[in-house]
Amino acid sequence: MSSKKTMTEEIKYCPWCGKGNFRIWGAPVRGFKSVKCNSCGLIFVRNRLNQNGLTNYYKKYFSKVHQADDVLNIQRQRMYQLEFKLINRFGKKGKVLDVGCSGGGIFWMFLKIMDTGVMG
Image 1: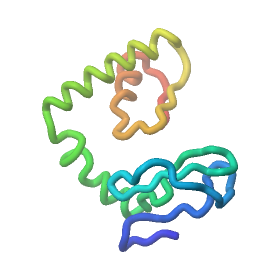
Image 2: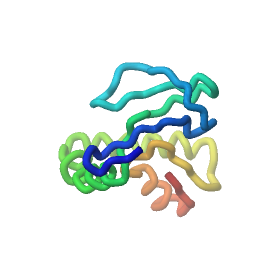
Image 3: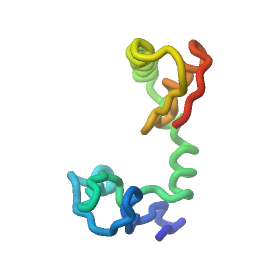
Image 4: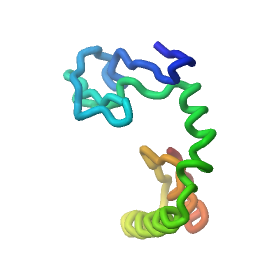
């Protein structure tokens, strides 16, 4: 069920196996509750942002969250360079899937340097 007013939706069934039997996994983080499916073991956020919540979050994300601190931006760029070097040691061709890619910063390394397909 989704609500534009609350900006979240409650997941009633496991996105992987479709079962509705899970238990709390870890402490809530900023109000988001992680659960573990008792059937397949997948861990997922049960009360995730709905489309309205995602739109609202990302509208402010780059200006107020992700790009707000110059020191963190420099550290983040260095992290992307190190990750790129590590990944590049294991494969020089193909596509890249970044799960949990946030703003997708490392993608730009692959696009600029390797001209490869990226997804995430």
